Image (tube, rainbow, N blue to C red):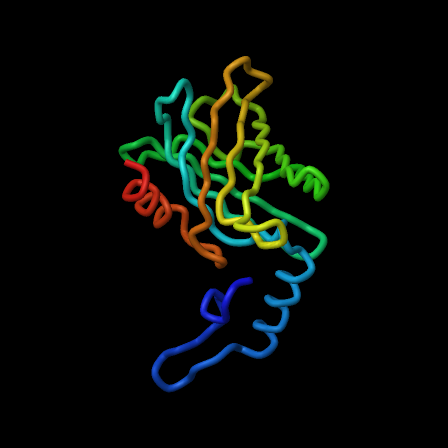
Amino acid sequence: MLSVHDNPYYVNDGQNQGLSFIDGFFYQVKIRLLGPMYIEGTWVGYAYQDNQRLFYIAETFDQTLITLSVIKTQFTRGGKVISRWESNRQKIDMKTRTLSIEYLPYFHEDSTDKKEIEFLFPIGTNKGSPPRIMNGKQSRNDSSKTDHIFLEKYSDTILSHRECYQIARERYR
């Protein structure tokens, strides 16, 4: 179970310490109800093919009890944005602990890509806890090539993808 200090609504600025009561309450309710499929927040990582790192990834998951919205940005090793995707359809299978997401391109340097499909497998520290790592695969336009993905949860809040590129670059050189 996450501690109060892991809560994004925890405040300790020297004068005020604690949680915004309403935000903190709903945060705890979400964690308890979604349990091992609580994935809201910012995730950073990379994709690789044939054991060679291709690009860095920043993904933000905006999750309620009944909806999930995902935005993904992919960066070259030098920081250039390759693509930005927005989720079109997503499915969480609680039985197999699998997350499948279909993305439509918001921006892609190769304008022929029409959609991307991603399958993620959240990995928690124990069976009932929210995951901290996700492994998976992504493919574009029913391509025969598949990229393998590694994502690590960085924050329970939504952060700038540009900031996430810097974090991913430092962690996954």
